[in-house]
Length: 349
Image (cartoon, rainbow, N blue to C red; front, side):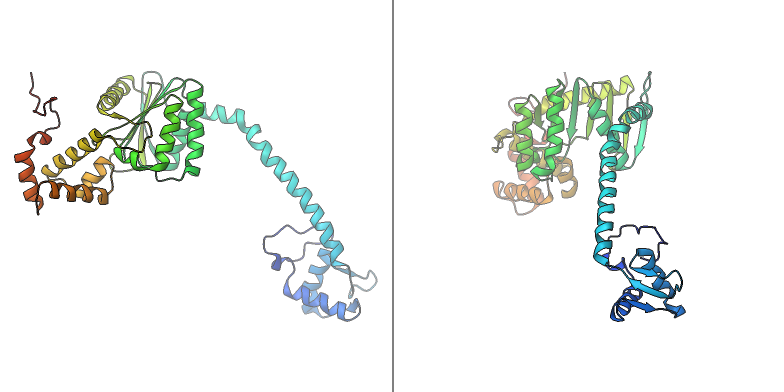
C-alpha cells in the first residue's frame, strides 16, 4: 500500500504483505538501526519516506523534513484495528438492514415484472437464471395449487441441499397450497428424493411416478403454466392464456391418472417395474437408440443396459434382433401402448 497522505487512514486489504511496501519496511528498519532517528535526504527514498509518514510510522521534523523519527507500530496497529472493527460493524449493520429496506421496492418490482395480462399471453424467457427467478417468484405467490411434472425424477442433490427446497414446499402446504408431483420411476431409487417425498406426502402432498416419456411442466393456481423449449434448458415459455393453460392442465391430469402413487418407500412396486420394462421393449422395437430411450424414461444408460441384459436372458436372445423377434412371438401385448386388462390391444369403438 502506498502513501495515503497525512491524517488519512489506509483502506483494509486482504493481502497483509502489501500493507507496507518492501522499500518502506527497509527504510523503517534503517531508521530503527540508527537509533530511532535518521536524516533521509536521498531523493530515491522519498516515496518510501512519504508512505511511512502517511501511515504514521515516521514523524518528520518540522524544521528539517529530512530528519525522520520512528513511532511505535504496535500503537498504530491497535488504532487501525479498532477503527476497522467499527467500520466492519457498520457495514454488517447495513448488510442486515438492506433486505428489509428493499422489501417494499422488491414487491413493487415483482408486480411490474409480471408478464401476465388479462386476456392471456405467452412470454419466452431466455437464460436459466432468469427462468429460475421467475419460477421462484411464482412459487412464493402461489395461493391454492402447484402442479409439477418433473422428468428424470432423481434429484442429484444431498439431503443438505434439499433442505431449503423441502422447507419452502412444507411452508406452502401449511398455508393450504395443494401440491401434486409426477416423477419418472428413477426417483424411487434416489435416497434423498425418497426422504423428500416421504416428508412431503406426510404433510399432505401427492407424488406419483410415470413409466413413460413426458415433458417438464409447472402449473400455478390453474392460471399460469411454464414449459421448456424442446431440446434446451435455457429457454422456457410462461403462459397465462386460459385456453393453453386449460389444455396443459388436461395433459397433466391424463399423466396423473396413468401414474403410480409414490410415498417415499424403498420398495419399488412390481407393476412399476413391469410397465417400465414394457416401455423399454416397445421403444426398442420402434428403433429408438439407447440414449434416446434412457432420456425419455428418465433413467441412466447403465440402468437401461442392465434391463436389456435381463431381457436377453429372459428371452434367451444373443442379439437385439433375436430379442425383438422372440418378444413379439411370446409377449405381443407389450408392443401396444394401450391394452385392456387381459393384455389385448384396445380397439377403437
